Length: 308
Image 1 (cartoon, rainbow, N blue to C red):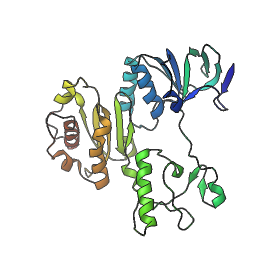
Image 2: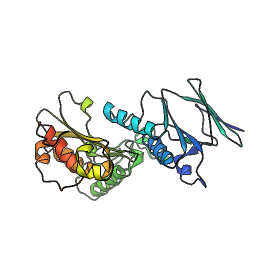
Image 3: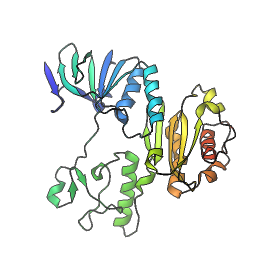
Image 4: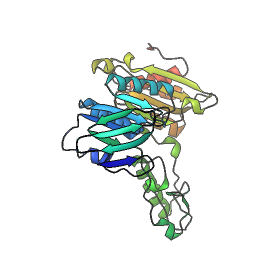
């Protein structure tokens, strides 16, 4: 019999890496942590018919998504998939026996499942860098926007520079570091990094949320208003565009079919400082899901003609 305590290391519970190597699907699983990884694996296992319980110690799932409507939409979707979501609960203890895993929560509830998946996020692996004299902030190597450290001719990129811990962010940082090390002057733009959650439905965001701007103009359009979404049977979800009072696009959020593929249009708008009107006046192919973006951009100025 093995135990896991909230204050200690996990002994016997699985990480998301190990979950990819299960020999067979468990009948039930409890997932600790309802960030991106936890929600993604919840929908994966739920789709496969596994009974899923998702536990989050914070008052809401996906704390990185600062939009209440998106959170409500994904919570309703998880519920419809038969996934139990418990927020505001910490795991006090896990007991692993030969037959089952017993998980005790701070709220007094106890769950018996075949597996437990720990999806509480990651910490950069920067062991040993302190000995080089690099300036650190906890596990994070401090760099400027040129990816330079405090030591001349030493650059850093990727997860060791801190969040967001995303592959495409790390790749771009690597390019910026290499260009500056080669004598070019390149700067990293952290405001236009897309955040993608491969859940069901998919979620993708870039730039600012509405709650992060003092004065904003907002456009929104439902996927149910596009013929393509109806044809593929995926009408749920929406696109939200957040612009400043001058109409410049500052953020785009999408929840729905192929959100992670569509967010690239929002990245361009945020990166280049384009107006919602400029992006809305482009000709988008029909019938495609991208028309949802067009209508959302136009809706910033109350010009959407197909709004439902």
